[in-house]
Image 1 (cartoon, rainbow, N blue to C red):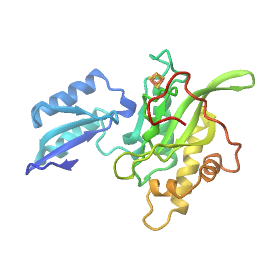
Image 2: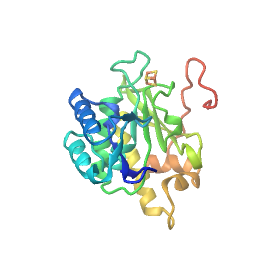
Image 3: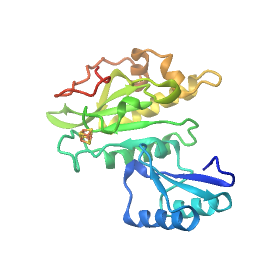
Length: 243
Ligand code: SF4
């Protein structure tokens, strides 16, 4: 919840886990916007909702109703910051299933790193086209297939250190990849390393910026790891994201 410029009004953000919302949740949000706000709802590029022009004295009520419908206002940084592209369920270009996977990753990270105190943008994208915008994420993972015991399985390639705004940067391909089932392990390792090794007041973006690709790869892998080339997109990629 954040104060607006207009005295006495706030806007309320609701977390829509990996961008999937039910008709019932939409009805709840619409009713609340109509009853307590100006009947306006905004969608964000983080796949979340904003209810605007809410009177300050009603904000706790709005938050409570949103939360009881599963649209949490005080969600964990993992739920708030996870974005997933459409994935193989509805996109014929996708190499991986992304939506159910994103939910599972968030649940795992909530369990493994409770109380994580940093904003985290974790973007999951099912192919190099980057509809999940993994190039501007703290941790952006790109879907691919790898062979395990002769079978092709979902896997992800890691890019780290992207941001927009004050510290804008494209995420760096760090040469680490793993099967989808091991993604929470890798993220847990790198985030716990950050918690253990951060300098006074150092945020996650600064931590990633002062470590080399080799160092980040070792933190993700939990030890020395072979460097893997990122598979390039089959067609032209958007300007500025080559690499
Ligand atoms: S990034 Fe790829 S898989 Fe995901 S929605 Fe876009 S084209 Fe489909």
